[in-house]
Amino acid sequence: MPSPPRRLRALSFLVAALCAVFLAACGGTGDPDADPASVVPAAAPAYFEVTVRPEGDVRADVEAAARKVFRQEEPVAELRRLINQALAEDQVTLEEDIEPWLGRRIGFVVANVTQEEPDFAVVAAVEDTGEAIDSIVAARGRKSEDEAELEERDYNGTEYLFDPEEGTGLAEVGEFVVRADEALLGQIIDAQEDGKMLVDAERFTQAREAVGEEGIGFGYLDVQALLDVFSSLDLGLPEQTTVQSLRQFLGESAAFSLTAQESAVALNVVSVGAEPQPGQDPAAVAESVRALPAGSLVGLGLGDVGDQIETQLTASGLGPNVLGQVERATGLNIQEDLLSWMGQGSAFVQGSGIGDLGGALIVQTDDRQATLDALEPIGALLEEQADATIEEVDEEGVEGLEAQFEGLPLPVYLVVADERFLVAIGDAALDSAVQPRGTLGEEQGFTQAAGALGEGLQPSFYVSVPGLVGLAESFGLAQDPSFQQARPYLDAFTALVSGGARDGDVSRNRVALGLAP
Image (cartoon, rainbow, N blue to C red; front, top):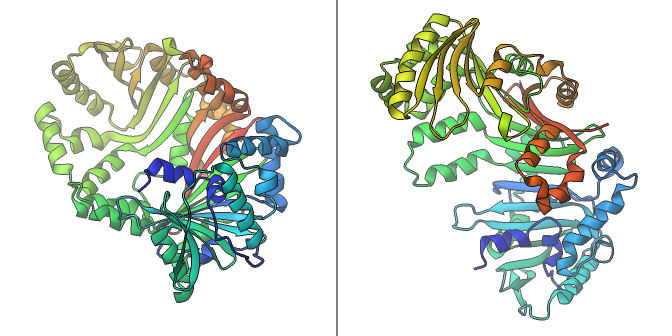
């Protein structure tokens, strides 16, 4: 059998559809707008789709975004160049070998995941199946004269060609050309007889409807089916705890769509049937992110830290063991001495280079004295177990500990300031957390990025792309050829931000990558 890297490469976007050899026989006229999911078996646990010929507003939005990324008024020419560059290894060109027959959408299927190697399939909608087949056969012939002879085979009346090197079969199925691992190809052919298609499956239709179809990419996961596989694996984990908590968190199915607009490129993710997570109030999380120091490279809202830790300890079934170990090591009762005072949490990273890189964890506390009382045994544990040097901190309303660790050039502070518990790495990060010179919510870059999430979605995560690029350059990546090649495109992006909301039993999340004006 071929190695997974080779098989995955052969099934990559477009290259997979072109390197394959389809049934060398006359075909009928296909429907370029046909839905690839309409021939995929209903039991497929994972399905992905790319719109390679967007139309109308979707096409206009993609072109507007591409103008900014490629910094060209006619970005299609640059896109063509990049695609042809990727296809050159296989001696294929977009203009001669793809465009004459390619339809609007290509689907990718993953199935039979309980095997050592899952099965894969590419399902392509085409303008004309005969022209598509002839073009792909010709392209394969140009690629190499050493390709193994294809074997003509038949499965339940459907003829296909079997590639002994790849272990794949290629056939015309309805209005589509299909390349798949042989077992999965048989399942696709069988599905045409029994009529059980993915496009009609309830979990699939719910997820696709929830995420929407107005985009250039789409993906679907049958979460319950994948968790059934996970639970059957011998991982040494308690099934009734670990898997059950995953079922509650992930829901029954999930889907994503990739969309583009002039102001941002966004990944939209939905989970259907997931239970609400304790301590995750989107408005409170967003407020904690907005309150982080201005100039932060990364900002993250954590929700109610105490509630979430307690929930996870209970759901995992590890609670009694963990609680007992901590109490024996520190004398602290986790629930009474730690979790009881922990509220909303957030974290940030700041700095422009190795010399000033730092960050902090911030957790709201409703009992300052209880928080301070917990620090003394924590400091003693760090001295004993981590060989840390501990000193007390007590100045201008900031109380707690300073820890120095061997091999770490920056001090680590565990302190209480006002009604906040801080774990800060470095003096600069501590100063920013205690007395910020402004907040992230006041910065234009953050507000523009948060606006790209759309109505009803609150920001929970933020990354400054220019800041991250500058940090990467300070680590020496500016001299890396690959980084130099990507650098001009990175200048097009302002910030990455994500956030979410709930609508009944549907959890919605969006990750937006802002584009510079």
